Length: 65
Image (cartoon, rainbow, N blue to C red; front, side, top):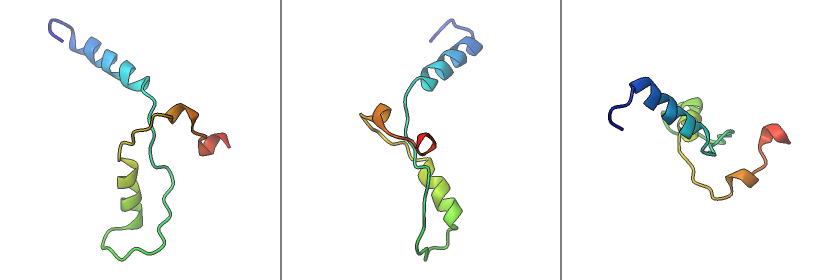
């Protein structure tokens, strides 16, 4: 975008991103961690992985159960 105010471009970007349905890993249970990384760190990093799903609108979320 050229010739557009930066605040307008940013608000447009935020609006478009907010309307895209997304999925993320919400709950992680570690049974045996033999690495030097903490369980919470691994769970946090897993939650940052973007997941593709064609049926994201059909998923039952844990907060809706």
